[in-house]
Amino acid sequence: MSEAAALITELRVRGWTLGVAESLTGGGVAAEIVTVPGASAVFSGAVVAYATPVKHTLLGVDADLLAEHGPVCAEVAVQMADGVRRAVAVGGRAADVGISTTGIAGPDSPDGQPVGTVHIGLATPLRSSTRSFVFAGDRGAVRVQARDAAIALALEAITPAPEPIRE
Picture (cartoon, one colour):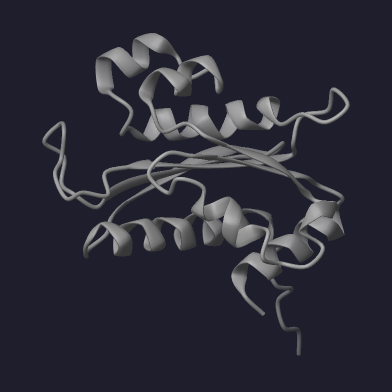
């Protein structure tokens, strides 16, 4: 089973919904999720906030944070993940889980951070967090690694720990 399929299964078990906010992945996370049959039961939608101002206007990322640190920042990723939960609300109910991607896929870096820098944000009813990476490879490889890491992080966050083996 793919990680996207496992994520859909875990969300269904909980009765939770998912929203995705993407920048450098440009819709790749959402596209991977909707390859899974039955994804519509839990996937509320996605926002591709590629331009920095859209991160503020559609996702509610703090304008001062964006001005001070730019869009490739761990806190921006967390705010994107939280903001997409509200942005894809259905019937007034925010999505339970939001995941986001922001980073620099290359070939050049606009702000001096290394090409391959990626921040993935996660927001659930239980916690918000971020994980940062520096992926290797060309633009396409960085985007694929970011997509896969976002899905893996979401799955990890909602999958219960296995019960200890008792003898």
